[in-house]
Length: 185
Image (tube, rainbow, N blue to C red):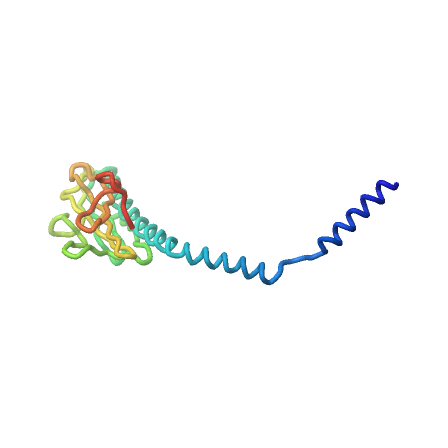
């Protein structure tokens, strides 16, 4: 019994020493809010940059998917097909079947100074797939994302209809890691 009384006494005296304080002081809350604000201020530009990159690459992948689907539908149906620019979208038509891919918010069709939005594909400015899956002439559609990031979706060589995504580096369009250098955004 005596042992139990000592243990209870120790517990009650420990509470008395440290107090029965609950919650946070105003200064503690202000420090936490200041730290959160500082972290948000540092991370916001990085987040904006990543969002611009994601929007641009999502649009490029949408266009690439439309090219690839049009090619596969042309092979499957054994007919030709076309892919052309629409209003903020790329539209494919294969044997009367239409499908499209839209651009993300903040992304437009555009090209660097001295370049054109549609490069190649002949006079019609549209990709024309053959029944064998090739394209009549190689070419590209170009888009511009936030922060003037130019990307082209190119079909080359004509015989295979290979679709590649390339980014403007200030002088030419390059594939990812071409020449051992990563893309910069």
